[in-house]
Length: 511
Ligand code: NAD
Image (cartoon, rainbow, N blue to C red):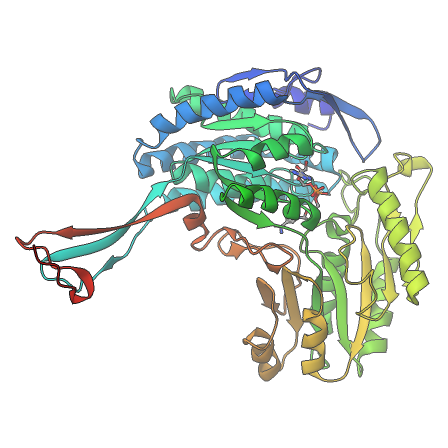
């Protein structure tokens, strides 16, 4: 199924105009028209209309009604609905994977991998639907019982980034749904079609089960639609994934109304390579981390901090590996790297290159904007490597492109200090066969990131763990472990089954 028209048809996308959808109903929005271009070949794939404030308010009202019904469905039954959604995603995996790859520009393997991640989170959520446990505690008062329970929150708003156009939404939505919440999704304006495709898949399940509209909604649009969600006190939780700039704006708006937000923002991820590292695994780990998804993962490897004894060897090995990379149409087999998302991303790459040079960086693999022939969309660049100091302003910033920095170290303490000396705190890793080094890296004096790996690169994560990072990465955690607690409200209840009224802390109050 490589014809894109066929793919759109099989996913139920109206290429001329779709945009707003709440469960079973969809309509073109009244806001601006978004044209979705593929960075692969520059063609316009389809047009999607965005939501204006009236569309948005209509969606929220429908969601509120849906919540009243959905929260009454027992959690394991909600899990069964999510199981069916997972089955539908399995049926559509190939088509959706192709669309993700074509609209976003990642390799087909990664597009399919993204859909697999959605299926995996469905499975996780199904199990979770029977495990939304609260603790019971021993009361200090006689014949009293104390326990906590978890209730659904309400409407969960989801703002997502272009680079994982569908997986990040599913991490939020599937968990929110088993928790009894309803969701309103504002996808990236750069990848609206994959969102419409997902909504069609979910809608089929809602209709088959005669469930209300508004359990799942999509409002297409740009940042102004994101701001509708941020400022709206009807949104019980806003989960926002994107740049730190976006997170600061959204976080401030949500905080002003004392709402809940879950922020998943930019990273500046480093790999430490010790002199005891097994380079046969470190090198592919670094290269995949740096050039996979054309360096447009929040967990992409940006910095490699290398022990001085092996610095030259590792550098030469990386230069050799980069020489073998194939850049081209990501839908074709054996292509390692596709395009950047758009021409603006290419401009950002060029600006960063200029700054690296200005600050004194030396390129060991040269940067280049690729043009002509298969690179006609104007979105293709060559991955590059520069030797730098960690304190350069450009190295302190996340550039969403395949630019890798090499930094030398002598002592592990120094390497950890360098790794932590950036404003972001998402993913980190060390390649070492020395258990003391590994444990030091993982200790409280080690990596300050939300993700710390040993002998695995920084890039990519399994859905079973809680995903997210510290500092300017926003502090949020989503996906696995107990991240579900973000999507529910905790209630502590104490029940007195005695015939007296003892007060806590032994306080006496007599009438
Ligand atoms: P972006 O910040 O430009 O946009 C992300 C989303 O936020 C889009 O839907 C956009 O419309 C919306 N948005 C932007 N400004 C907004 C505002 N002021 N108010 C409300 N909504 C707003 O990011 P992007 O270019 O799409 O994605 C790349 C960034 O996302 C990188 O920084 C990357 O590290 C980060 N990211 C982080 C994670 C994570 O889990 N930590 C995952 C994926 C991507």
